[in-house]
Length: 375
Image (cartoon, rainbow, N blue to C red; front, side):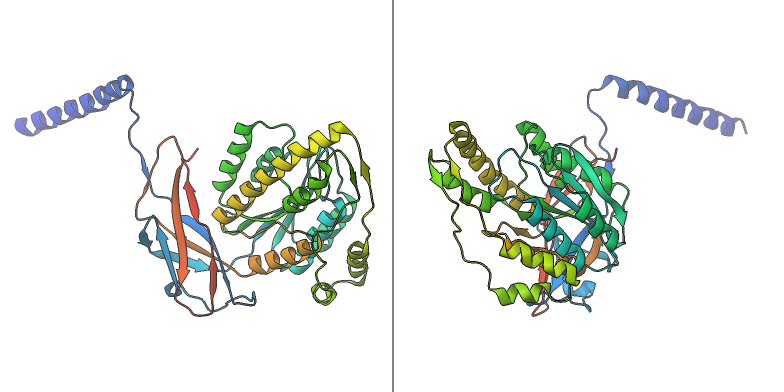
């Protein structure tokens, strides 16, 4: 019995020294302990036929996920309603193509084409950041907000709009989240580092980013304005054939059809630009539009979204319909990485690929995942 109590006392003393001595030693060291966290990764996977239709009978055995060269085991695969946030960039101190009318029309078409099972919200960015419509499945309420509550201003605030969008997504389920951006993604106020951080945060937000950009149109139309004298604005490319546009708006409410036709028949005004300050601004903005287009394309590709920067506004409508079909053709696939995330202070970026052996099926998903430390 004495031996038993002696052994027990010795064990308690050893535990006391380990606990407090270890804590003391830990306070003195400069290296934080390594914390290994197993994160479940959620991927939005678009599965479409060649004509853009949904593939309804896909199974986990039909997909292959490869992360950093290592195959991953799919834990679940399901179809769930989406959370779709429209971020509408309606500001800017000098625009040649970006139009409140075309932005509104593109957003309205997407809302009309997308499944009513999805939750929608609308955020606008101009002189300030405003929630036009909070999360709802009421498409009529969204259309009403787009009709009555959109405004334009003389400031571009892309970085601020990203921060506000991420905050809005905090109220939504982690699965099947989409940000649809319509604009040019310029910043009147943010510096370069703030802008880079906005793109990094968006990449880490587990959101698929679809983009309909004005950048190519702006760049093309600003070319003439960079000269000291310019009369008129040329249309560099022909319109989309009328039968394609008519097919696109078939099935829309009559009032919306009329609105589309009015916009598509609108004539561009001729202008004369002689202001040297405007010429200098146009040259700078043209460089910004070119750089912004590359950034938007990269975030769309990295997150598995669609990117379209058309040469004429009518193509924006086709892009909206394409995005609506893609969102409705999504599966949510989850897996636990074979290589766990070491919970360091910095986020960890990994390349990921999703493929299929099924013939006639086109797969699109994220190209990068960002595993971030838990807050």
